[in-house]
Image 1 (tube, rainbow, N blue to C red):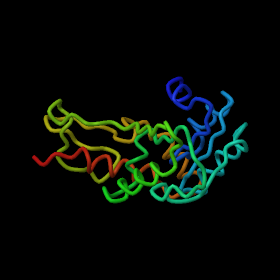
Image 2 (cartoon, rainbow, N blue to C red):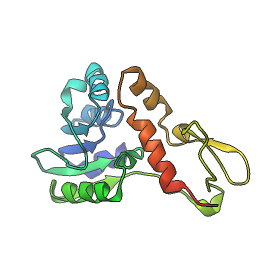
Image 3 (spheres, helix red, strand yellow):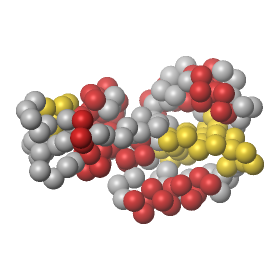
Length: 180
């Protein structure tokens, strides 16, 4: 959080995939003006219900489009949310649209894991449960837990959302998968 607040300077900032406000709300509490984009009205309803949630300006939409009319000192997408954009074309479109929203000297932060297939993280094949993946050499990984998405996925299902977190896990799996 410190790093984002420092990079933001005086703001304003934009979070892509703002969800329930796990990152946006602490930034608002630090005095920053925060906008957010998310495809899930259910997740945004959870954000609105939280203390300070009404101080985050939200847009329901596709984060690849970056459908806001403002300039930002910081635009960020964290917790592997970039993987909700299921194709490289969508990701490139998102990056290009973010570039058009950055103020002079602005920063775009992408926080996502980069797997190390040589380090024992190679995936053989998916189980029926897309959240659990067997690893080459034995064992399995609970991908939702490993990506820190288990709680958010459960919260989104409970709210009747579209289960974007499960889709993120699927995309992370595709990025992580090593044929073997």
